[in-house]
Length: 335
Image (cartoon, rainbow, N blue to C red; front, top):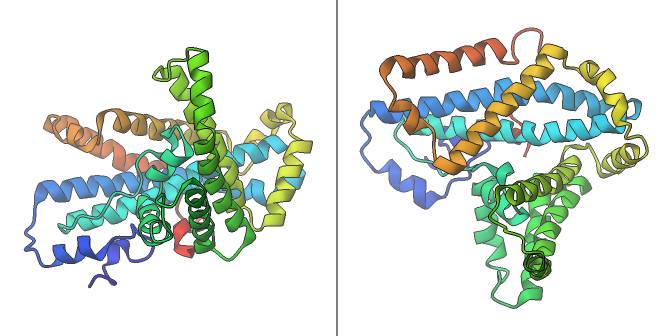
């Protein structure tokens, strides 16, 4: 039963047996409120996958396949879009899986918690693919000694854990480099923490100010996004060639003239930007106030159903599907 539990069978969340097996012995009766919340979570997952991820994927695939003929700024744009493509693709799958389980009365662990609002690489990995991150922590990092055997051993354990995480995604040097970069970010962040604290004290920087938080968030995203280039590139040599091409031919001024020829026409490109804004707004609200579903379900009946109808129509009208598009499997089905 545990192995074949279909909502999370293929790609997660990577549930623990101690959490799921006990629920299989509990009596389950139909709970309309729980079913409604599960369906809303599934609807949000479909929005992430069909409306955002699959739309962004068209531009990302085009640029990564034709980067020698494009300005380097197009590679930067595609890599930023890929960060949100894989977030919405895998986050969408996780939300659909968690929602489907909830409709049936089962609770699966949270897998994503607004990761791109993180202010450090360490925080990012507490918010990204939580079920896998905690699995590697409990079954690799801690058995290696964790942080119990001194600072040097802690840093070595961190690097080993992230390198193995890269190999888990595929036996390719690009995945190893991706894991190594994310591990190096964490080690460097901890090593530089005393220097950073001293500089902030000397300059009297208030680290609680929104501007400082925003700068740290943007910097963390840039680090994570650079690593995503290696994850998306077909090979390490291709990633290295793309970086060299981008550095030599950045040409920001050349991008506007070719923007709507990168597999997304003007309406689709503007729709992508608008729905990314919706995603970021939802993440910001959830990080500050908690889940939005309870707030929605407390509204008056006409307001609730207007929101439900609007969400369904958005997926139906703006979703990327149908005979003119290639069906896209979820990205994590390959791992």
